[in-house]
Length: 413
Image 1 (cartoon, rainbow, N blue to C red):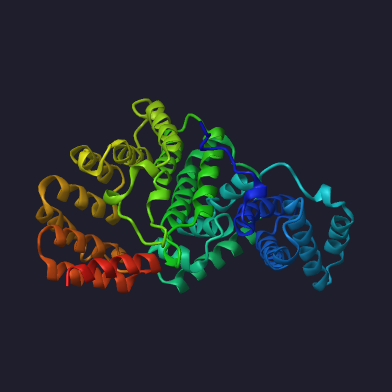
Image 2: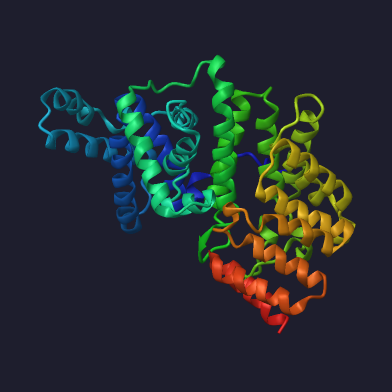
């Protein structure tokens, strides 16, 4: 059986996917050697742009990571020379004289980079934003959508975080064991948000981005190897495997969205489901319960149902009730409303949904109206459902979701 955690052959990767995977590795190596996070990130971005232009004409080089390291290192040298800093020039001139092979390192510094971005000198929102930018490669717009805040606010947050790292003199190393637990929570949230943006993109023509989900899962697997006794690390990895297992069935050949209850379950990745369930089985009941373990358990209930009609909705509702106690938030309440509707009827779900109407965190997302439309449709209130679908379609920047919601509204006309 195929190993769901095995990395794909790099020769089969699309150039843009390869660049996304290599970018944090190259950035991590540069920061380890030179410090100056901000300057190193600028150099890596320039190297990525050069690669995108050159590789399109010449093809991917034999050692793409080494190629990126060489170009990014030279960009750093050029920048330091332009500042006429003799000491830095003397130090970095030696970098140019190193052979290409010496610039590359077999060590993957990506996980260390994640912990650096999650340093306690930064606020938690800044930690999340900077990691998604530097490691996940998300745009400022994508990160703002994930946090449900305006883009300008997120841009300022990222800039301040870079400046803090630049002036702090933080060493580029994994935190000592005594500090890891405090920073782990933010690292897990970063990987969770990265995965979610890949699984359902917030904007653009594609429903999902496999490069993001693959990288988030890879980092979660690395983290699990580093901290195998951490239940929430195992829970997050299980959640990613169980959720991503449905990827192939989530859209038709024309890119249109297929909702969960209409998906062809034969297209689900059984190897990933089995791996996720096994991780969860080894974890539940042996360590304190956390939100990622609970979400993974919910995903497992969905994945193990032979058909949509056989889904154990009472169990899912019970899990959401526990999740809301452990990690309350509007998105959890939104999902609990769906489960409640499936158990006690759409009116019950709509009543719970109404408690979110005044929550400002839901003002920047279409999901509240999308769920309201679904529950109103189940309740037979077709005119109100159509209006809710239309509002949701206008709010989302995802073209596949726009088309799906508009189609649901049109069917109720």
